[in-house]
Length: 588
Image (cartoon, rainbow, N blue to C red; front, side, top):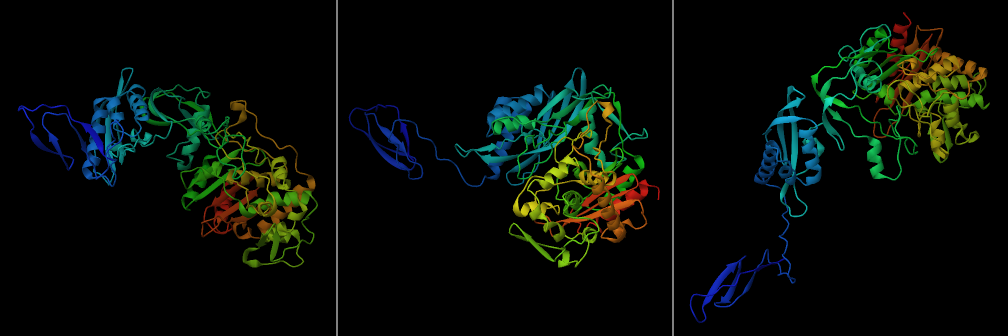
């Protein structure tokens, strides 16, 4: 569009009419001397504006040149380094957010003498090094880290500006996070195993998130004194959720994972632990004893380290004490994973069927090649069938259709109630001492309800949940697992609303013992009898070539469960890990 520009009135030095030629914006304009005139500068052949307002320039577009990226980067880094926050913020596409973050970098994080060194550009992205000094109440400490920015075209005019993200200030910052220097929010904790030895990530690499969680929860209660540190104070997810939707959502110790397609009244997000970036002065740690066994934790670490994407938990059925928890990945799948448990869920489903009088260990039970329900056709592994076999035989071989065939006899909420009332699952009320996911068995209908009976559909578990399931099957009473004794902070452990009946308990133990002796778990559990029981599982996952392999078992007063993601059959992947830990814990 043309841009109208008024030219000031000019007078000729000579009397009479004098002709001058002007060239503006590529358009020649002829003006007569002695008179006022208006000219139009035309951009790209556009028409002149028809109103009296100033016209906007054409918006620049197209890929950014190296010069534009360099210019925008230099303007931003130079202004930030000089401490002219408003000027630095103005070179971004969100000046308000940038100004807040950069102001906090100085006033809240107490970083001074900043030097910003630009690195080698890669397209529109430019890395840079941040060097400065964190100064707080007479204590100074150098700070160095790497960050990066990306240059984009401003929406209003296409000029190159910095694409503002919190990570520009520090790569670990997310939306709503803050950099703060001061007394640590929580004192450090010296976590101890059950024998009094210190738990460290150097000794037990899997315990990183667990130790962070223990500090968050027990730092102030353990008697320590906080030090001074530069840290990232994480945003409260409940606050961010309230910005996105009406109403508020609470958070709890164990509210860490989504409830699949069902909406939970509790928050589905857990506030991440604050992160220490630089320690200016050490705090005095308080001591906190846990239930972890040093020998079993070490063995668990060794076993999962040898297998990709493996997680395992060991607990004591008689008390609920967690003796070991390990993961081969950085995420704590053992406590916070939310995965379909496959056929290990048949422990709960079998309790339900026996409870309802729909199955009995030694009675004949159908196990056809196929069974349909709710429009889905289910089959067994390799399409096997067991003719005239007992329910015990179907359980030991992990026959899917033996369970699907009973779906028509159940209510939509039958499995949910059994899981909640007898096994203590899915109520979001466990308090183990750190954040955990307590399993989910949502009420479903039609084919998904049937699939839930074999650990698919909407059912979600982790090794902690499944170790608890086999422990409950062994003792007949749900004992909530815990990592820190409730006497430490007076918290109340979760309980089940009804005990398992003697009939269900005795038959369930028989099913598990037979599976460990002569079923799919026999090879892994060889030599661990007679006081033992086990169940294998494989869970299909969309997009995976191999299913997740599950295994859960007990030996004496030890219960364990493990999963190897994309591990195939549980008997071959998770089974050896679980069996080895049961053997190590029982002394033989």
